[in-house]
Length: 368
Image 1 (cartoon, helix red, strand yellow):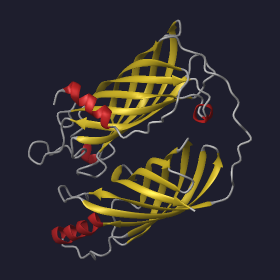
Image 2 (cartoon, rainbow, N blue to C red):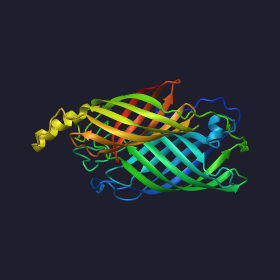
Image 3 (spheres, one colour):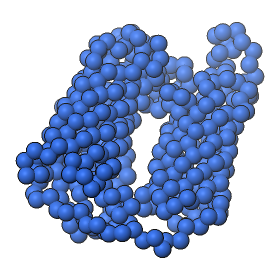
């Protein structure tokens, strides 16, 4: 596939949170980054796949708004935009990857002339070399060409020319995974050092200073939520097939302030792939596990970072009921929540067992 069309395809397919607002005053900038880094060997099985330092570039378009919206005033007028990425893993096993992202950049010290910024981004990637039982059996990190991706970048800006051209340096953590839609799926995590330039398109405008509305009433009452998630995933066994899973969660939530909510509750997992995985282990390894012992239950605590009707979800849990041991009893969940009305909401989340993604979950919930 032509690389130009591939990058355009990835950018348009990316599953990003797009905030639709009637901005009254915008100014934009274009940023380029060159980066060099080292993939993390989080599993000894990656020893043959990681062969050297990776390198690449990141092209980002950023939009600034001076509108005094609730979102802008809460988060110090963050930048939002799109990014295109190219990364060469410098490995005959891993090859190269192209990515498209929706990103948000938060100003950690907005009153400073040389700001420190944090960028978070989510999107899709295309890997040129995936696992192949005959031609590339060392790539146990990625089992499909199309992968989910995310990165976090901490960056520092130094003004150079009339506040239109900035030098930027920083550190990033970049992740690629196919969330167990196709195994193998150990994933690749890269820590990189960035160098680049940021150019303001037009004349930068002063960000207004408007005090937050301290009169907003925050209910301290605990709310109860019922969540149903589902999707398809595959077990650790390569080419074992996709099977449906169902997760039911019941949890309490308490809003701490206008952008932060704490959660705690229970998960019940009905994962059909695990039933087939147990059957395979019994057959291939001569074990005698009960194939009906594939259901699991866990307890979790979490946090929701609210941005208008959206929220970023982070949870950590422990599987207290699991008759069959699968990877790890500790699990994490990351993703997005969208509020439809006062009671209904939807979610897209990724469930992870330590470093190994288990499932991409699509859910709908009800707040009582």
